[in-house]
Amino acid sequence: MLTVKKVLNNNVIIAQHPSYEEVVLIGKGIGFGKKPGDEVAGDRAEKFFVLRDAEEQEQYINLLNYVDESFIGLMNDFLERIEARLGVRLNEHIHVGLTDHLFFAVKRIQQGMDIKNPFSKETELAYPKEYAIATEIVAWLNGELNVSIPDGEIGFIALHIHSALTNRDLAEINKHTQLVADLIQVIEENLKIPIDRKDINYLRLVRHLHHAIERVRSGNYMEEQEALKKVLQTEYPVCYTLSWKLMKIMQQKLKRPVPDAESVYLTLHLQRLNKSI
Image (cartoon, rainbow, N blue to C red):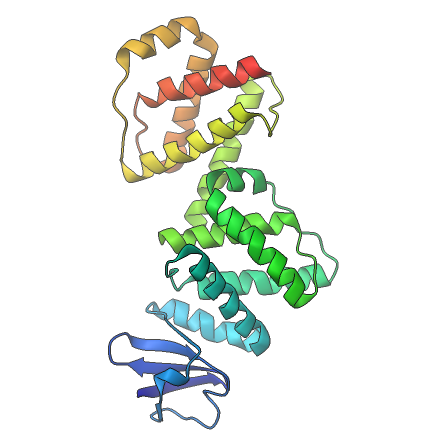
């Protein structure tokens, strides 16, 4: 038995749990007639999750003031599908962030407003597993809500899933996605080429940039490649110089050192891309 701390609505309560302290319990009618201090059987809950952060608790409570209960129930089914598909438990902050995001996204779609995502392709390349799951979920949501969620929304959902999987802040992930897009723009301007987003060399470059950012963020640097660096500097001076420009941008944005070895791998990717145009 758990103790009720706060009734949020007829189907959602915050309760005191012996192991997890405060938990959110969700179940049909679980909060009906309950008041703080009452006991409630945990097995009556269809879903429970922990929101340890006080700010997230407050955000979830506020969420219930404007998101209807049927949508909350749908989102719980939605998140259970993701967890079942991945075989892991997602970080609980997704209950707040993704519920809020999708509720307003669906409202905009129902009002005829368009949703654009300029980084959708880059997101798919960086996080293919999350993007594939988001694609399946969008198809399911379209049927459940009788709406047509645009493809651009898949990328946003994929970022939320990645954030919950890796326990990384969504704002940081968005910042890194924007950084990759900025780097691609610098490449196009400096090489004076329009890059085909379907080119296999572009796909490899985007994946490399995301991995490079992650390595810099985690401090997992690669071994130096001094001999190869000198050869590339002589053979491909334009791409080699551009690689250093990209590294300086990364260093400024990430506020962390980028290892010299990165110039070797970037030069090779840039040269392959330049030759394929």
